[in-house]
Amino acid sequence: MTLHPDRRRFVGASSAALLAACAPQFIRRRQSYDLVIRGGTLFDGLGGAGTELDVAITGDRIAAIARRISGIGRDEIDARGLAVAPGFIDIHSHGDGNMDEDPRQESLIRQGLTTIVVGQDGSSRAPRARARTGGAEPGEESAQSFNAVFDAINKLPPSVNVASMIGLGSVRAAVVGEDDRPATPAEMARMVAIVEQALTEGACGASSGLEYTPGAFAPLAELIELCRPLAARRLPYATHMRNEDDRLLEAIDESIAVSRGAQCPLQIAHLKTQGPRNWNKLDTVFARVANARASGLDVAFDRYPYIAYQTGLSNLFPVWSKDGGTQAFLARLIAPATAARIRTEAIGKADLIGGWENVLIASARAEQDKPAEGRRLGSYAKSLGADPYDLAVAMLRRNNGSVGMVGFAMSEENLDRILAHPYGMVCSDGGAYATDGPTRRGSPHPRGAGSFPRVIAKYVRERKALALEQAIHKMTALPASRVRLADRGILRQGLAADVVVFDAAQIADTATYEQPFSYPVGVHAVILNGAIALREGQRGAQRTGRALQPA
Ligand SMILES: [Zn+2]
Image (tube, rainbow, N blue to C red):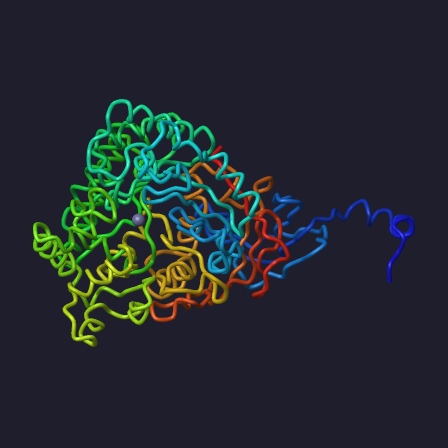
């Protein structure tokens, strides 16, 4: 049936008039909202215990929070027996990596995530270095600004909110290139200007990836210079440190030195003590963090809830061998002058995490290497009758240097302590993917689909490493304050309506290293900017993610 617009308006008006005439006191007293979440145990994100409270939402804001909201919602969620919390915030995410390809971002929203902080490990969407083979024109690195990045996000839009740091590796790639050399004074000035500009446009911090090239070629003095613009804004320098195993303490010291030199907050990314022989260093790490804080520096860290990390297979190879970029690296792997030394160092690094059996091949593009996906490199090499190191080199050469790996190298007890530490936050360090569509490929680390539910299932319920309200705090208000997202991460009247409703007794990850394409259970509803993004497994009609900038 179709009604003429005028006729429809007449029907609407007359029924409202009729209602008003019949029960004027009812109309006046009963405020109405877009959505009311009733009867849940509310955790406001600040770390206190849950309380039974209703939440009302109008537009994209929280309109009211009260013991019992008498107003009615156009839509209502019965949350009795469930936890109601601010939507989770991932302080270290790679979830924007394929959002253009699949903006549904299923593995994120189904964890209860509503905001991801990207631009991590020294790599961000801007500036983007153009092909430098023909020689870079001065200023071309600003071809893509953060304004353009944010515009593109808002135009997409994604399924979660996206805040971004500026990657200092991207800045170096755009200005200095891939070479292992100090920046000239003119290049330093250009890099500082790019960082300033990005922060002015709304980047929420600056990240480094000092195990990755060309970011690794930056000395301490360069990092300090590039981080100075963070100080006045109280935004963090977030670092994937130069080393996370045998030289972990030196790397911690360097990170603190950047913070001290630039007088900016420090966020140590995915803090870990990698390799069994380094597991005993955690007390010293915590002591150095405490000392830095006692001296007035704002130092914190984050960690994903898994004892295996994921990176490129090339990360097992020395940084010096990558000077000049991928082609130079691939050539050195087999050049007589360098092959033996690289071999010794790479095997040393593999031994450090317990040998090739602790290296799982996550992804490879070459057809010949597809069977390796999801296999341990040690046993896969054995099945081929190959030497594992030679196979690793062959795979890197067949895949243009790009082979994904998962390394099993961390301690469960240390993970408990890192997550439970008052300055520890939860991150995923993962990407986004779906069980269907173009992002179902390779063998990604399960953290991209499981991290946030897993912290509650394994580290709150099973291992009792921390309390539920603490875990929620580390997923909400704490990361929001870290990157100064002023109206996120807390459930309070007037703030943004990003909410997750979950069963605290049931929520759990189901993705594994063998079967990563599996969504969590126990997340009943996710509200993003006031709109229902997920409800009992069904996605909302629209994607309502936005680009977020610090206050
Ligand atoms: Zn990293």
